Image (cartoon, rainbow, N blue to C red):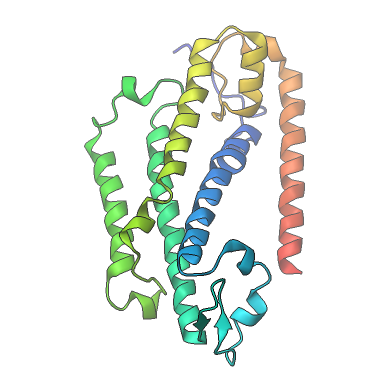
Length: 240
């Protein structure tokens, strides 16, 4: 009851804080973890990252049947295609592993997951388990290599992205700690509100007077315009 009604002029459903947190912080971390799994699979099969740079032209040539990797081993086109599908599967599994951590940190906005209770919600645990089961089914079920280009993975490749999942959880715990620890600190709270407090409604009663409604609105407009400009450039670049 202490939370004021949502101001549709300022508190947008998808605002710059939510976009910054989801895409530039958690999203970038998940992308880095997924690419780490991708290049780990390539490196363990003989393709070091430095070799993969500029390799696409020769990699996709059907008549190239003796393409050498970083250690001089020759690969046919079919072998390279299967290796590519394995990397796709590793990338997908890495996203799934990190999404489990993303689900855990979304349980609360301010409190730690330990105080809230991590294992109380049985539906969430069932969802996490089903997510892993579906990923394993897509990877190991016969016929998936022909239909969806999923390939079986080595057991060790499932654990490559766990370090990034742990990093996501620790990062969000630190974020919540600063929000709880310094609720009245103007400089810290101002940074948190602008950068990492991703919810659209500002809870603290003095937050609007501290930042100013007009300043908040101008800040939202600038961030949204920058976001739209970035999306436009990305769309035009993809079309070109």
